[in-house]
Length: 104
Image (cartoon, rainbow, N blue to C red; front, side, top):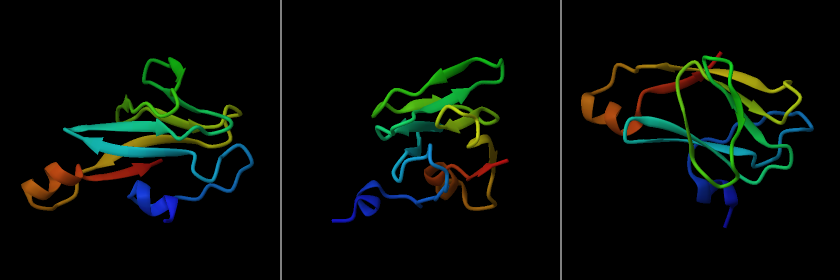
């Protein structure tokens, strides 16, 4: 079967050499967002609001917060600040989906 279908979600393509075809996955569970590096060649990084930068361990979901910066590869060419926008859907659906995740 197709690996993309097995992971679920919506694939996003970033056409840069340091970004693997299946680089990372963002998931939402129990009110929190998680980033999982999918054994990418150049790594995945998170920089928090205090400027602390750390590498995401492969295959281990790592919690991140809105306004953190996610970086694919280590050369700072694929960096995205995370912003969560609440959607005007029902409470039950919002709890399941967690709103809309947007990068700035």
